[in-house]
Image (cartoon, rainbow, N blue to C red; front, side, top):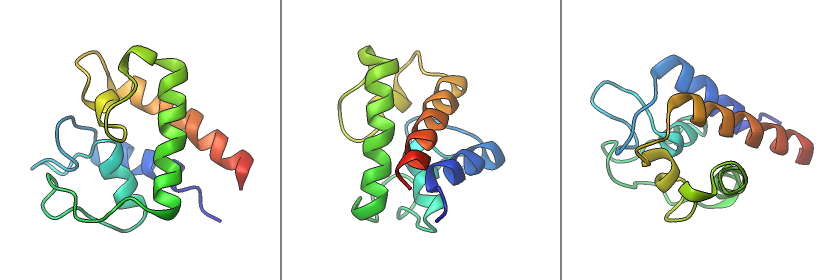
Length: 110
């Protein structure tokens, strides 16, 4: 079974990271946009939810949120992982760190 969180990290590495949009005009993704891509899904235009978070993708978001709550509690909460991703202090290094830890947790469950 493929670790889609780890695949989302590869998406971010390849395409780049952004805030305030699932996918921006340059093709960079936020955390959730990278997760969509790792599942072969895309929001309507990168700015609006086009695919509901269900099943395994919802589980992935929960794992990421668990890590955010543990590592950056002041940036946790809100809808999905958006509050953390879009927080003014969040950097790409923070995102990669959280995603790596979530990927390890997923590996432990697979």
